[in-house]
Length: 138
Image (tube, rainbow, N blue to C red; front, side, top):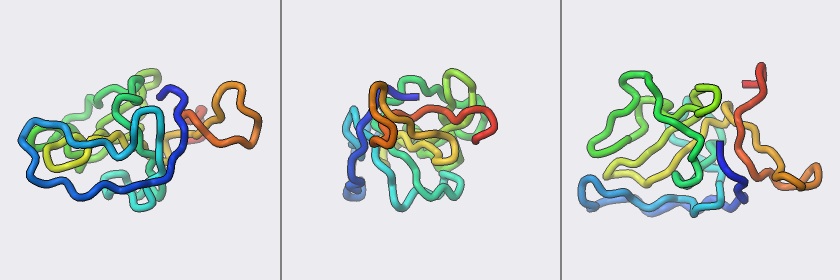
């Protein structure tokens, strides 16, 4: 679902306020990295470790076709559940949040992805790629 990414420590952003409508906020995670949010948002179905990506790294994600999941003031607030699916298999995998009062992130459901070692990385190394779980795993 993403190119190879490097893990980084979670660094929360200050609360977004006073931004113009229809503008994107900052992303919590720079391009090329991912982080694990220790306090994932409620819309992530009780997940205990949401993986957060920069939206530019979610190129293999597509909008959901489920009506009612794409609400927000100006863009997507993510409150109504998963609004991103895997382009390959169609599984619900996460939430894009991009509204005028939010940061601009893609948050993957921990239950929907497997952190895989980067190509050429030795077993036991730091996971670097988010991919859908194998059949029967998720």
